Image 1 (cartoon, rainbow, N blue to C red):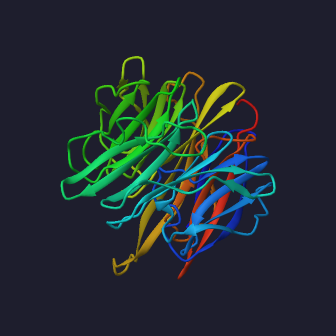
Image 2: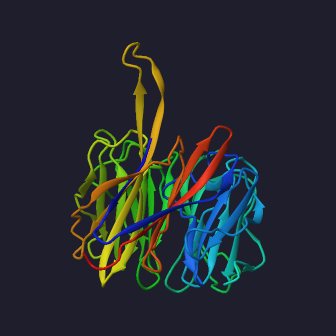
Image 3: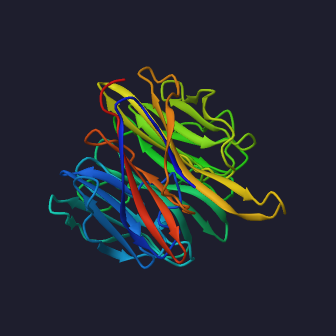
Length: 386
């Protein structure tokens, strides 16, 4: 078993152990975000099996002690968003009758976080799961989530009318995005001038999206192909262009497609990798290298091992394959050569930074050790413009 990654010339990768957990769901969903860079530190948030904790590092090698935020036994219940100054977090639960809470914090250079008061923004009564949080260019937080109750399961969006760390529901929110009841996976990314794009995905059908133009929702638009599962997708926004990757439903190719606000549509897309594994869960990161956009895709590659003499199934091999794209014109030209890091052993979680910081993109993955799981980190430093 190996960790595979793609490197551009003059790229250097380092790997380190962040901490341990008793749950395999340290991250789980590739469309969510769990880390960022701020005040000279890299920050990662995850579940240790009992609590939501975070750790920091300055050099990528030595990590701080874990600091507890709240009880949380599943990492995907607590996604994080960093707006360049503040960390925003939302907590949901996959059990009926729990509230949804929001909190904003200021990361400090000593690894502490100064949190605003915790607020309940959605009352008990439905199942709100899973969620994604973002912040628009005006500093106003948005949360997209899937709500299940007696009437069905639908994607909803809620936003705050305040940007000071408190939460006041904006007039007319929450708003339902689709009238189709299904187990949608949801994501929302910021565009220019307080616009956002809400994305909701379901296995076997084209990925849906609606844009908020600053005052109202636009018409629904869809990708030209469909994902194998709604959870196997990830997006980043560059201005008013959104880049999306997902695992295609039939070929299991990893597809990259772009949304343009100017015509409210997705292009036909390009292939990042052919015939990935049926459970490959890609996550997309972006960075700027000498003013040019660099997209990085990380995904879980799973293969079955077979005993040739008895043809009996022995186990599942998982690895992480980062693919790097250098694309100054955003044309979707994927390049790179693969190398191996041999420290992946049965892990299932994956998370990468939305945006590269300090010349690095970080990817976090999970290594199984029986009943325990190591949280590992790899840094990619793109370096000079290749």
